[in-house]
Amino acid sequence: MTEPTHDETHGGSLGSRLNWLRAAVLGANDGIVSTAGLVVGVAGATSDRSTLLTAGLAGLLAGSMSMAAGEYVSVSTQRDSEMAALAVERRELREQPEAELEELTGLLEARGLTRAVAHDAAVQLTQRDALRAHARVELGIDPDDLTNPWHAAWASFLAFTAGALLPLLAIVLPPSDWRLPVTVVSVLLALACTGWSSARLGAAAPARAVVRNVSGGAVAMTVTYGAGALLGAAGV
Image (cartoon, rainbow, N blue to C red; front, side):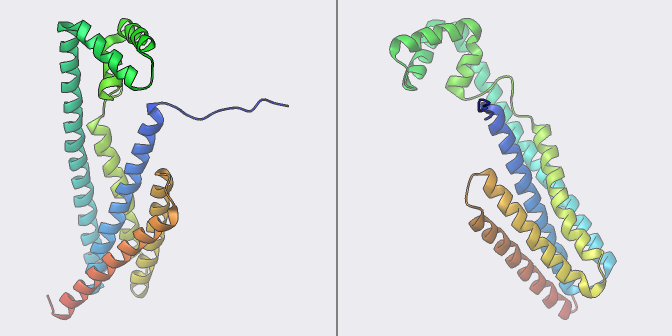
């Protein structure tokens, strides 16, 4: 008989990968819903292929750039905060090492260690790398793996673009009579997939997430198509 293996991944890398995957799924979902709403709304007013393509491309580019810029600004702010917190911790370690050692001991003790074991662990961690020990235990920051705003921006840009391409292609490639039904069906199927994926990544029940996602997309397309049809009928 072979011994059972234990291959569960531990550590911050798993959580980081799950966060990136979740962000990618949500970015793709945003691209699907926003672009689908846009092109379906325009389709309510006109069936001209070039108009639909122009509107879809404009929505794709505007949305992907907006997502990338917003993610870059957000993650840059987070990184600046992390760097500032590390700078404060570095100064405190230099100016009052004994107080910082006592603080680390207290933090480890609060996690369930006895006072003696917490003190010994704090001493060993401080001797090995005091800044890294305080960053991880006190601040919850890995100084070797700070958030990268460029990675976040590119991930959001690509995820949104990938999601937006589906409704864009679905509205311009089929014949005129099939554009709307093909777009609606493909978008709802894609939203079911992203809802299921986001739920699984969050360890939640997928059925509710799928229904919520599909319902939201259906409402968005219904509203925008109705608005486009009214504007088209009014000759706007």
